Length: 97
Image 1 (cartoon, rainbow, N blue to C red):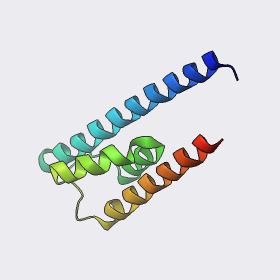
Image 2: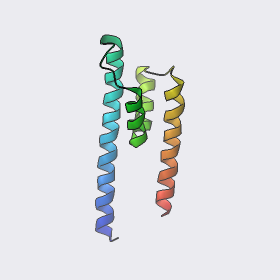
Image 3: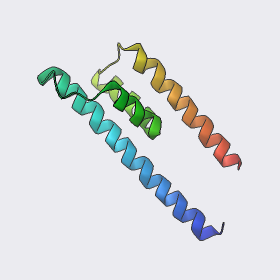
């Protein structure tokens, strides 16, 4: 892989991470609003966890703490930090390659 290909891949990865993190924040905030106002049309927990797994775990965890959403749900307060740890390990292993 030449230098140009590496930077194109890196740029695409950064764009992906920015996008997935924005989606995670929007979904978390929307679910908070929906929980108070609508009681329906909520974001499914599995969708929130999937978005976290796809790269938004850190920003979703911080967002949940800031807006006090799902902070009493052990499913999120345990799973998201484990995803963050997994993301750190993946990044560490990828850098070693």
